[in-house]
Length: 318
Ligand code: UDP
Ligand code: MG
Image 1 (spheres, rainbow, N blue to C red):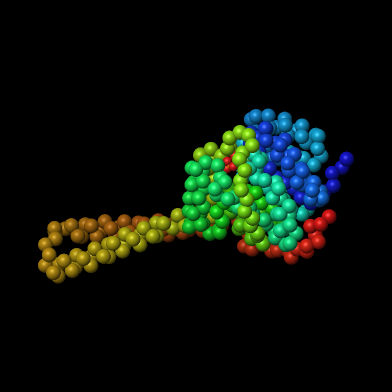
Image 2 (tube, protein in one colour):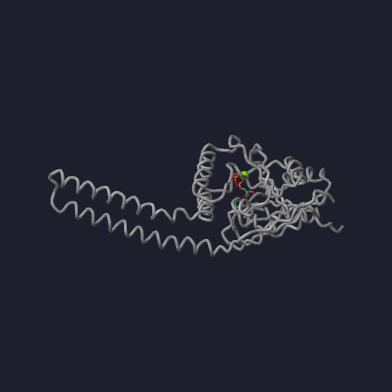
């Protein structure tokens, strides 16, 4: 039987999730069938080394609505999400979610309802208390705080990679040429009308988290560096501080001389020369960093603007 063009695609990146694939697909199918719109479930096997590949291939041959792409090695969660967004055939909307059962598919009807009402993106926010592990809770909180302080995007705390995106938002995201893809940030960056819904993260069905601490650090760094050049501007700030201190010190030296205070001869001049030279060097590094920051942002080749077509409500109904 030929599968009709889907209106909805659900993209699930999976890295060694063999035991979770069947239960997650079954639960997902039950919810999607109740929506009465053609759908596809697209699994991205991110170079799994367990039998995820075999389980997926069996599932795909048993159900035409399920598709799978296999990476040649582990390229990471963000790469898998991007592959899914590019390969999704849905004409209406694409939903991304985790493969481990932590994102409840029962939330999808609410997401679809918001989409029908005109939202282009429906972003879920994980209730922080429902995140597993104290350390993960705290590091995630800290990360969002640093990101909101340094980065030029407004990413709400707990933003999960469980979201719905209208086709035009997916196309805009796919068209961004940059290689380092911090999807959460890019979704905010492309704009469009976004609605938020809160959810309680469920416990992982089987297996352990696939985000090792090394992967988490590299994820956090890619988020920060993709959306902020502020750290590059730090040397300007340091130059100002050093030059400021040198200025205050020279005022003090003049005052001391006037007041007849005994200062060690030569001390003040050496200190001032060292501080002024240090300040000048930091300033020069600041100028070079400013050009580096601009070159860095330019090479991302993000578009100058993104246009949006007004959507009609009826469009979402088959
Ligand atoms: N994942 C992936 N590639 C990786 C790491 C993770 O595709 O290199 C997938 C993983 O299978 C899951 C999702 O990304 O579907 C989120 O990972 P995980 O549940 O381990 O992260 P956590 O929920 O612990 O933050
Ligand atoms: Mg998980």
